[in-house]
Image (cartoon, rainbow, N blue to C red; front, side, top):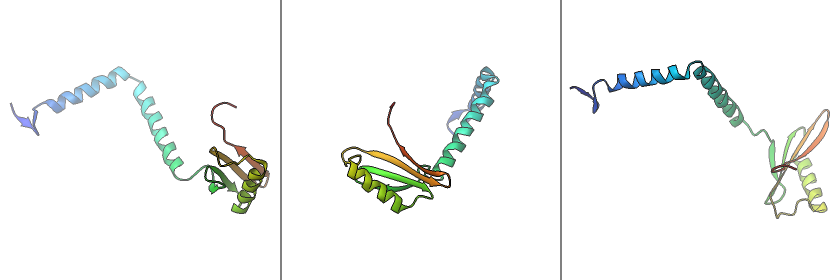
Length: 116
């Protein structure tokens, strides 16, 4: 019996028939599975292209304001100072706040873990 790279001759053809039989068992499902996988990969590649939260401003060592749109670093700094004054930012627990400004107005979003 001849060997190919240490495997008995015919080993590769056995793998091909095994793969074919599994594809037959999946039937119509394999194109759907492949499509979902490819959509997931494309989504992840797009997500890696940029930070969807915005530009990061560390108001304290544990609290962060992400600003986007027409918001500036000065806006994020002023908001951070106000949060410190009212006791929302205490530098004890991690908190994220999203600040977005555009032509329709200003939105401040509070990131929550779990259900609120």
